[in-house]
Length: 173
Image 1 (cartoon, rainbow, N blue to C red):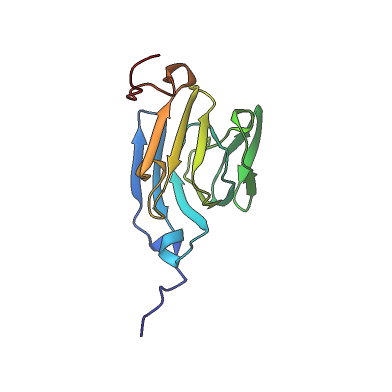
Image 2 (cartoon, helix red, strand yellow):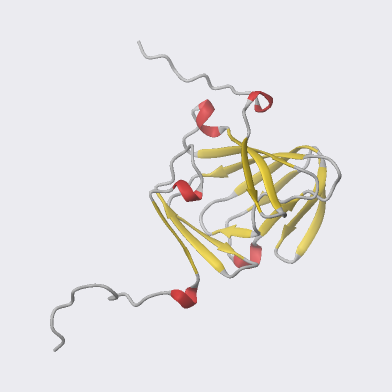
């Protein structure tokens, strides 16, 4: 007899994985979806210190995200619009392109805690509005993010190569 995975996990009982880059980006993260056996949905718990941001402003072409603010205050940007956010707010980030790029920022003196629930459509393309980058990821494991994908590329359109680049095409006719 196989024992099923317990379909319950408490966000406050998770060890947070530290995530930091420079002086602007910092978070404590816990992947919740795999803990409860979710297969079609991802869920991650974010704890953002005062004045910090978890991720660059971005838009997913295939995956939709839904944020639920558990504690704290900050702001949410989608496209060119910015809204204040607080505990209890539910925020939608539908799939789109760079014009719909989104980001949550902790503008307060305390922690901002929220859940990110998302579809798990694979592959996905992600555009980064402020840096002009894009990422392509395929075969992303449930317990990993974009950088854990079996196939991942991050670049810019202007650094693309020709379709035949590096291929043995035989002799030119």
